[in-house]
Length: 261
Image (cartoon, rainbow, N blue to C red; front, side):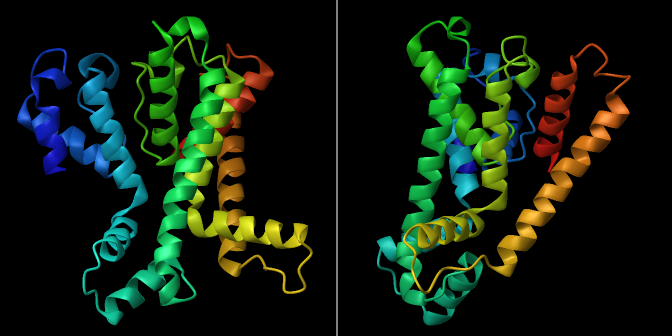
């Protein structure tokens, strides 16, 4: 947060050639803690350099302190005690302390893979005429993919996804929702499903099972998303959603429910 604050205060990070220290601190803390709360307009206040700093801060916050701590503990070869390894093992749900290095690498790989695929889908979902050049289109795709997967809530559109350029795009909203859900359920659940499907395809005798944790997370997520969407649809049907078409009302209800959850 402190490093992010200092970087955001650099002259080339903002169009105003400077930002008050309290605003920089708030923004950096919000990005690292992935809250999505802002006191300035991310789209118009920060330059591409400043937005890149925010993107990195969001990524660090999304990966989580324990994951990064584990990674650097192994990477730097520090004399971490067995007791501390056991704590990492519990949090990261590893079956073996010796697997932590591999597990941490898998967390990083899977995170970057999902974000890359999300950015790719977003690139083709964004209207081409909404950007000044291809570079900006790529940057917006990567930024929003990371922001969505890390559940950060930051957007490079001043109105968020209520912006006229994006609010009518069903494909864009579906990609964002998928990224939010995947980031929300976390690596253990994604890994369990991946290994389960992999074992079924290879028809192994000792197939991987869907864990109780995965079942609970999946069921709770589905109940909250569809329950919240049904409530939003019913309450806003004759209010904010009056001007929307029927399929847009459903999509809007789902989007708000997923974003809130």
